[in-house]
Length: 116
Image 1: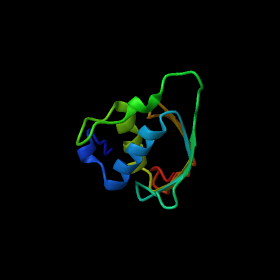
Image 2: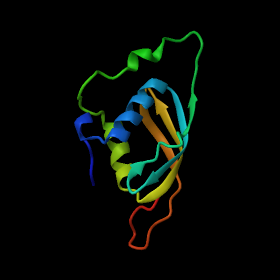
Image 3: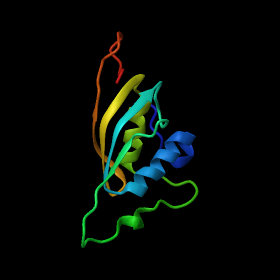
Image 4: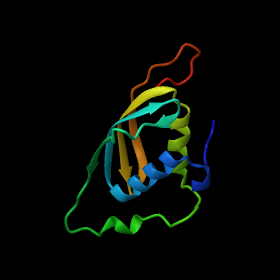
């Protein structure tokens, strides 16, 4: 597998999506396509932000500027995406700006690899 360990290892689209996940904080992305192991961000997937009233602001989840080490959940998410030839993440749930769980359309390809 191809697991990134820091933001230095991410493509431009992966870095953009990482920052968007941090910005959402709590919520989910829906209908996120994957082609040849890369997230398709045009058109932008549906973004649903969770809002709780009377709770602490989650804006403190902003990642540091420059390169930094990825948390395990983020590295696992990008590793999984890179292994998918073609597919769609139906729902990617976020907690504290990190991938928590996802539902992905799964169609095994002819040689048993991940095709979604």
